Image 1 (tube, rainbow, N blue to C red):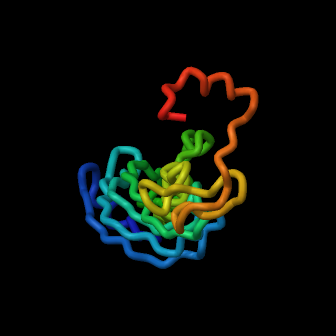
Image 2: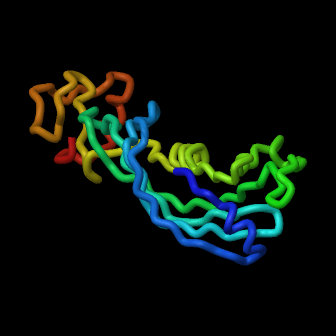
Length: 174
């Protein structure tokens, strides 16, 4: 996910370039992601390059209810500014005070690398509890049977501490 932005920086403030992204990546430990795709626009600003676009990536992991392995897409909108570290004309290093604040930078060869920003956006946008399907029944808490594949033979026992509440239910609902 490398882009040479030297020409874009030469064109000045307001210059923009559109790019399509479709790249295989080394599998991320957090999600098993192997592919990233989307469309983005790089715009020259008075400080550097503004990157904006819609990105998608694949993810895999266990369903949070039934623990079956699943694959699902993660979609997010990326908005980030990249700051140059060297002057385009002279090649002299630039002071970039925002770098200390976690800003992304363009390297000394005017190459903008989206890899780390995409990784961070992706992790933030991962679902907290991915599901294999919207109404996943999950596992039986007593025997561990997958309730999506059918019922289990466990009897529905009530915790004796809550049994007094059963008396509040109408007779046919117990």
